[in-house]
Length: 249
Image (cartoon, rainbow, N blue to C red; front, side, top):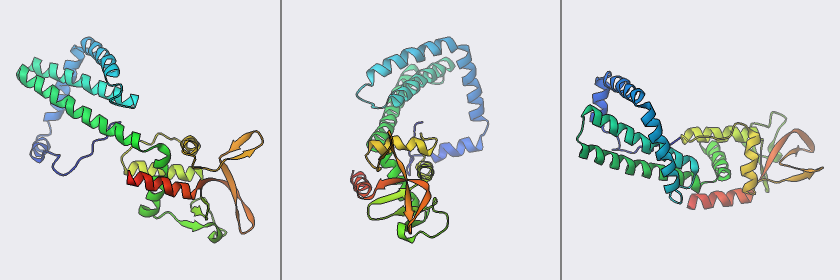
């Protein structure tokens, strides 16, 4: 997924109004373009294959994540295909087509680089910490000190004490998904269990050996009674430190 961040002035309101008032234009274009692509499918597939191989080699060191290199390769190919379509229909001169393709590729490269940088700068573990801050500040998740917990359900709380932040892995996954939706980002995790790897990589959670394995989730004690539910123990001071660094960056 490639994210486009729009700011004031980015949308051509006159152009938008035209297409809103003439709703047949885009469907007609799409139909005609798909017919063109069908008639030239073998040539197009060969071109995509050649372009992707060339871009994968040429973008090493310029774009970090392989999936964004592939995204740029595909979009790069699209500029060729649209250029060929425009030429066959006689809509622009060859010079105009060449300029259009060059401008599109420059814009696409900038967009891909921004996406690549955004993902590279924030590790998945830090993103999960940011999601906790988000749900506390924006969505009002209940926060309680461990000594304040009553007899009711505790899995919906964000619990803390002097040393740790306690939260179930599934609740943290839910927070991460909400935050990703808010930021219009893709959340790659399908369950709370999948969060353990990025949290371990950042050294954010307390691990305890039980038998032959290291457990990442543990039970907590409430008023002398052990709660029959396992929580992640996130190091509070380390989490605050990493969040501060991420915000400064």
